[in-house]
Image (cartoon, rainbow, N blue to C red; front, side, top):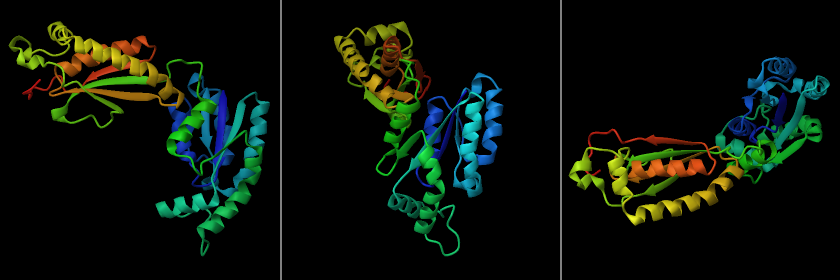
Length: 292
């Protein structure tokens, strides 16, 4: 079992880091009291493959008196043969103060007439031994969320897998709105519309007659060839940044004909590039279509 203990300053991004680690395969628990780490690690070690990679966030929220036990717990786990590492997230005091002011929340160590600065300074002193012992230290002072995710993937992602990124190809109709989850949107309304062919109007892009019509035009194949070249370039770079899901939306007017045929072909081509691919046709079965 691989165990990653996450600690650090309040407001430095530990909870967000835990979510990103979950995306790359860790079972995560946020805000576990320090005194429970050893027992929970023992449970995970005896529970099979589901808990082979575990990330636990333990910080000042669980009480400052438990912090000395974290270092003792790490030593005990090493004695059990558990790969246990410590990740410390920090940020400048000015950054921490700014983040708390922005959220209007109290710092966990802020009591009575204490200022946020008083609390942040006290926490820095309490956590100094952990920072000095940490295997990894990430300073999030000038780090946007995407960079934190990339850094965590670089440190803890399974780079032996060539297909970490899953691509979801969705067809849709612009008249019904762009899928809000889409990362990339492509408009194929420039292609001839099967809707205006009477014998194709009631069919969908799943049907071979519609597919053959859409692909009877050179511009369709040329468009897909260019799209494939672009994804051949983009996908390894998205994967290297730690992205685990990419939603590609292909839209035509009604979402029944052109977008469906193109989405199916694109999903097949992306799959051949070595990436797990799913295919979904959001508007294909709608009956209130007027323009295909």
